[in-house]
Amino acid sequence: TFASEELTSSSELEDRPAVQVGDPFTKKMVMEASFEIMDEIEVSGVKDLGGGGLTCCISELVAKCDNGARVSLEAIPLREEGMTPYEIMLSESQERMIFVMAPDDVEAAMEICRKYELPAAVIGEVTDTGRMIVESEGEGIAGLPAKLLADPPVGEREARKAQRPEGQGGGKHRPL
Image 1 (tube, helix red, strand yellow):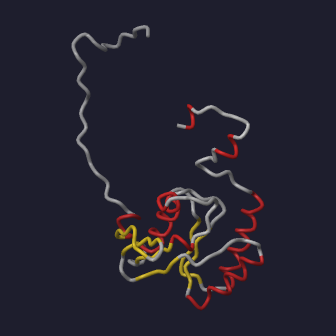
Image 2 (cartoon, rainbow, N blue to C red):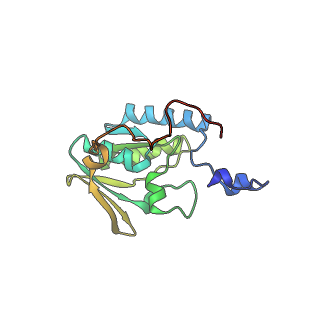
Image 3 (spheres, helix red, strand yellow):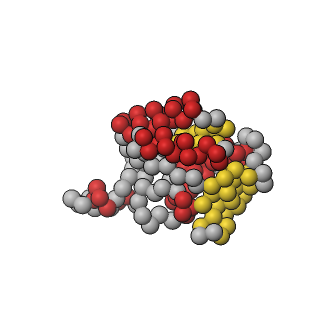
């Protein structure tokens, strides 16, 4: 793990953090662009990409309306090359938003993003299937009900007090 690795002068470039550090300027540009998009375009849904990445964000957006989604991995702007589909769909992202809008409004939203010098892409579409399908090179590589991803069942387990072997515990502290 990272905690046990040797740090060198090139570690910063080699070992990117699992959680990105925020960029205040980009955050401001994303906020300004988002407000402008919502003022100028009829948006059906909007969400920031945080913990859980695209998987969480997209499934929550579409499940609320009993919809599904089809997502194309190749269309997603990446922070670095060579990311696996798993990493793309689950990586936490700072200063990123996802919008749901009519196809006719996409170009106007893209123009606003260009104005603020922000990367933007159409990464998929909302469907009426109720399933979230992830595609790579045109082939489905993952597919689950969006509601299952957005609101998974909570398992209940029986709890009981641990049994200690004879002669252990009893409230006495022992030196290590």
